[in-house]
Length: 440
Ligand code: LLP
Picture 1 (cartoon, rainbow, N blue to C red):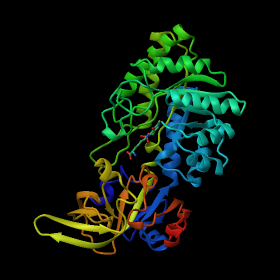
Picture 2: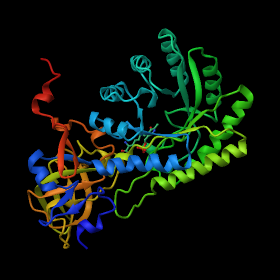
Picture 3: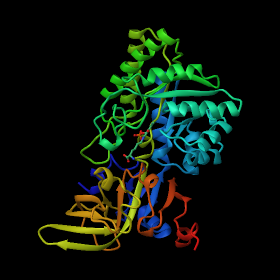
Picture 4: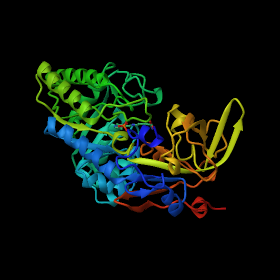
């Protein structure tokens, strides 16, 4: 099978191979894009992006009328993306004044913006309250007082959710599991802190507690952690209703929905997660005699992951006979830290040889000064020569968002493709940019 056919489940929806054997996305030839915009280049396929927004909105909306899908901006955000997310009817989960400012730059409806984070700064809370943010998801007792104080000064009553820690292991990488007791995030139910926060929140005059939130981790392939969390939170909510008259009008099981990165790791789709979550909510409402709350879900990776593809140009190739062949590209861990940080696996496709069948085993490495700068280990791809264009699918989430200027490298350009047209949505950094904030 040609490499392109094998990889169709991880490429953007519009991926094709043209008569030159080149990979195309959104009707644009990746080899031409590489020469027009240079490399490394991040390409977002607008069709895939809008499809995944529509899928999450549609699947949850179909099964649960009072639901809102909010995109977790931390996976990647810029103005162009925020505009599309709004056009697709999604809300936004933000975690900083920076993400909030990007949302404001495109007049994102603030009522649909949720502010997360375990240590929101006073200035960030002031900004959020000043622009009438929809909800602040309060993470801890310190923040509860801080939000109340800022809201009092601004003479408003702020709608809040409380982020709880249910004590569940989502069985994902330890850096991205957040539902366990031993985590920096949230108010643990087990230690009594969650209850303390509920009582406190209900007594603060400038806060309106309207519901509860949990986030279990990221890249969660199974529905079991969601089901368990719903059972635990709803049981707790019923208890709190009885004891303290808690109003449980809104609930969020967070995000964390998996995506397929490699051919051997298929992931469930939005419909599967929606069905499981909605069923679990209905049965928990029945069991604990609660009115169904409004449902908020927060996918990040599942919205942008597959819509993004990164392309690089191959340079030096190093053979260690009998051991390994290294193909070095012009990007690496500065634009995609995930393999080095989490041991994440990616696959590669040679964009100018997408129709080729014969392969050889190589490892694709970056250009940065660290041995761990390996993007793809031991993959079978068509024979690469310097100048070939290497594409890494499923690069839309947590690559650009976590990019650095390591080795004083330049953050890549980003384009959006659609119907044969490519538009720049963020220009490549320049050497002047690197010195812009320096002084001597
Ligand atoms: N909601 C909350 C409260 C979160 O903390 C997160 C992600 C999400 C939603 C979205 O999760 P997603 O649907 O994207 O899995 N840098 C890591 C992922 C960190 C996720 C942090 N929180 C990675 O590259 O895998």
